[in-house]
Amino acid sequence: MEQKYRILKVMVVVFKVVAWLWLIGGVILSVVTLISGSIVAQQLGVPGPAGVGFGAFLFMLLSSLFSFGALYAFAELILLAFSIHENTVKLQQAVGKVKSAA
Image 1 (spheres, rainbow, N blue to C red):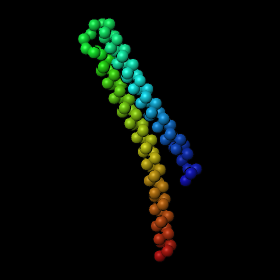
Image 2 (cartoon, rainbow, N blue to C red; image 1 turned 90 degrees about the vertical axis):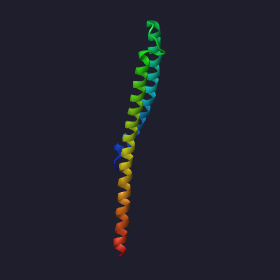
Image 3 (spheres, rainbow, N blue to C red; image 1 turned 60 degrees about the vertical axis):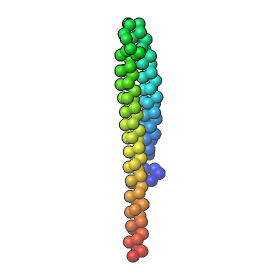
Image 4 (tube, helix red, strand yellow; image 1 turned 45 degrees about the vertical axis):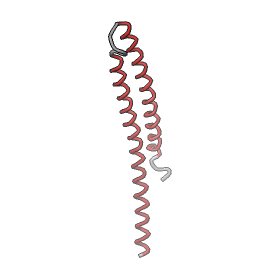
């Protein structure tokens, strides 16, 4: 089974790397949005610590977390399919040995 499904194994790694990059980038952009939103709110005299920037910060942070979870879960789902396939083959071989012994 080593040679089978090679591209899917590569895609698992790609999905996991993209998920982590998405999370890191999303957190960085969320913080930048919060800082820039608070600077703009301060210059405009809007009351509150961060003004509109806080809402954008929260939205970007939550959407980044959700996207990370979805991408990472999809990669794990592919690995789950590999495990199911491997266990099915092992079970089939075990049943074949039992039938031949009987």
